[in-house]
Structure formats: structure tokens, C-alpha cells
Length: 437
Image (cartoon, rainbow, N blue to C red; front, side, top):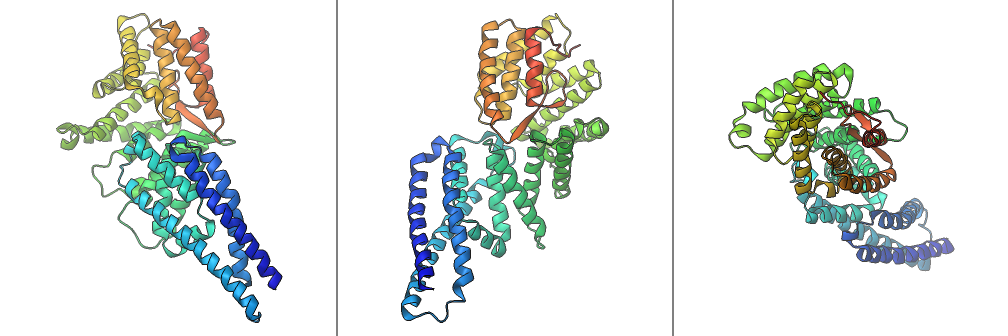
């Protein structure tokens, strides 16, 4: 028995060194570098041994009642060390919870445009949480499940916009499960936000081996669950518009999407907060509704009506390139109007710097639009430049566990990134066609 305690004590000392090393690694890597893979890998290797040790100590604790005085002292030392380690990680979890409480004040739309300082805060919180042993997290889930669900939801949302898609899905799925297991209803809408971000993730990223149809079904279910929790919110537009977008991607649900959008547009245009004060969120949502409606009509072959919705979207947001690109595509070939829309789209892209965004899907979509607009306006040198940037972005995307899903500018349907890139190359080479009037 004494030797067994000695062995555990030796492992404790080894892991204590590992703990100090983990903190040093975190300090050396720094949140600016964002090397989360390296940090999390180091943390995981050490923390797996911590979890095994904690479990083993608890199993043998009750069996050591008859030990000698010397062995009892050794056991006390071991327990004290364990208590100190547990206390350290509990304090670390408390710090992460406090950081996520600050981030929880962000609206769902603000997550898409985090400042550099907010991105750093998110990264630091994810790194710190990754080093906490699962035993500590499980105890938090048992004692304070709602708090843990809130932490996981915020960390999952931050990971989604940092292109850590697998991590985002794991955190958000676990948060959703915890929320659903609670009998007490909370008024902070944490469950609704989680279902919304799961819907957003499902419509944007495809796990390997899954079909787009299955993924859209998942997105629809998550967004419908979120909508059910917002029935008392008359000015809630984000969830129903996102749900309409998901429905618009399948032939069986496109008419339902059109109905939802028609009702929402009427409501938003009559909303004094949206019309009189023109708050940024309302403007952006009305723009999205116009754009989706245009895409529905384009898929149905009503190019002229689609053009009208794209023009509305462009007028609603002078700083947006997508509506201008789509308005150009829907215009008749060879017309001055078509060329002007493409020129406007290029100028907006140049001034907005959207091609430098962190969100990989947004960056890829903007680079595709940049290739199209420069090709149509005869800027061959810039076509090559943007194609090179696009190749770099798609190489980065190839290393992810999920495939990005994008609306193709050529078909207006949701497609996997590699399909859209193939259509783009054919278009630039002159062997593919751009859908147009």
C-alpha cells in the first residue's frame, strides 16, 4: 500500500511540473498568435493524466483506513496536493465564467464583427477552459448546470467565428443538452442563443460524410426550436429570417420561405424602430430579407423580379457588395447597367476590406465576388491576385474538419466550397456560364 501511495505521489509531482509547463506554454504562445492547436494539444496530454489520477485516488481513498501512521501521512500529503490542484482549476474555471459573462452581453449579430480586443478575449477564454480537467467541468455541470451551459454556449459561439468549427459544435451541442435537461426555465435566453448558433453552424459547415440535405434539416430544427422560445418577442427578426434562408435552399420548402419573408418584410417596413431610427441591425436584417427573396426568384427563373429585390437590397445597404454583384448578374448581358453594378461591387469590396475578415466563409465569399467583379470589369491583373488569395483561403479551409457551405453566385443554391470553386474556375476560363437575364 505504501508503495502504491509513493507511486501516486511521484505521478502527482510529475503532473505538477506539467501544470507549471502548461502555464509557461500559455504565456509563451500568447493570445495574439492564436496557436490554439499547439496549446490545446499540450494541455490535453497533461490533463488526461490528471483526470486518470483524480479518478484513481478517489477509488482507493476508502480502502486505506488501516494504513500505518507513516502511510497515513503520505496519504494526507497526496490529498493536500490534490486539493491544491483542484482549487487551482476551480479558480481557473471561475475566471473563464467571468470572462464569458462579459461576452454574453454581445448581441447575436455583433458576434460576426468582433473587435481585435474581443477576439483576443475569446481566444484566451477558450485556451484557459481547454486546460481545465474534465473532472472539474463535470462537477460544475452537476452543481451549477445552467452556469456551465452559459459558458459553453459563449465559448462555442466564439469558436464558430474563429473557424474552430469542430470545437464550436462540441461546445454548443453540450450546452444545448444541459439546457434541455433543466427543469427550471431561465429568462436569459441562453438556450435560444445556443439553438440559433447551432442552426447557423449547421447551415454554414458540412461535416465530412454528411449530405447538405441532412445538414439543412438539422439547421431547420435548431432554428425552429429557437423561434419557439421567442414567441413573446414581437420585434424578433433575426431567427425567422435565418430560418427562411435555410428553407429557401430546398425545393420542398421554398414556398414556405417566400411566405415567411413576405410577412417579415411587411412587419419590418411598418416597424418604427426599423424605419424611423434605421438602427443598424434592422437595416441589415431587411437587406438580408430582400437578398434571400431575390435568390428564391432567381432559382425559380424569374430573373426580372429577382433583379428588383437585389436593387432594393443594394439601396438598403450602400456598403454591401453581395447585392451589387447579384444585381449585376441578373442584369442583361452587354448593358451599361450590368457593368456599373459590377464596378460598384468592386469599389465596395475595395473600401470595406472584407477580403481580410477572420471568418473564413465570409472571406472566401468576398474573394469569389472579387474575382467575378474584376473579371467582368476587365481587371485581369487583379483577377490573378484575388485567385491567388482565394487559393490560399481554400487551402486553409481544406485543413478543417468541416466543409464550408456557400451560396453559389452562379446557381444561387447552397453548395460545398469545392463545387463553387470549380464553377468559378470554369467561369474565369470561359467554359462556364454566369446565370443572367
